Length: 200
Image: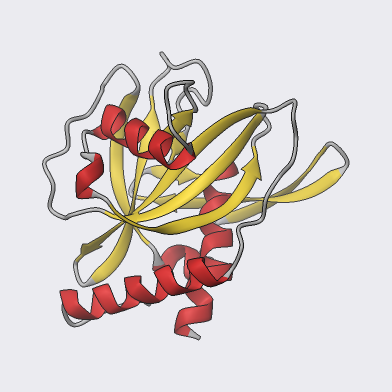
């Protein structure tokens, strides 16, 4: 389990994440037919552990209805770059101001079965923080211990083939939420490729 005695130790851990992200190039995807999107992996310090903020989407949104997800969405023409998209969407969905996010770096790109090319970014968010939830898009949220993904404490795994490539679909259960699909894959990959390189 990832446990820290104080905020200083947590920030030392986050600085190591930043170093690893800057030393490894993100896995890129070149697919012209996909729509571009970006998400944020928001890390916070709660109960002496790093947690990740996740949301549950409403049934009013166009895609991923009722699913658990990371803050993020489609890239708009007005966005300067994918990072700006991730920060803008995080503010629009849960009310965290871009200036309050300490960006650690960019992680890998992913393909969503909904036809999106997803950029992922990692950042620290303050905790506690007065969230302003956009209830048109977000039904609820929770903070999940990052150790659950580092230790791969999934409850089930299924295998799915998309465009000829097999994928493992992980299912994590936490606090009444089922974390699966792209969100589970992003967080599992992040733990494997970044977190385990720091703590092992």
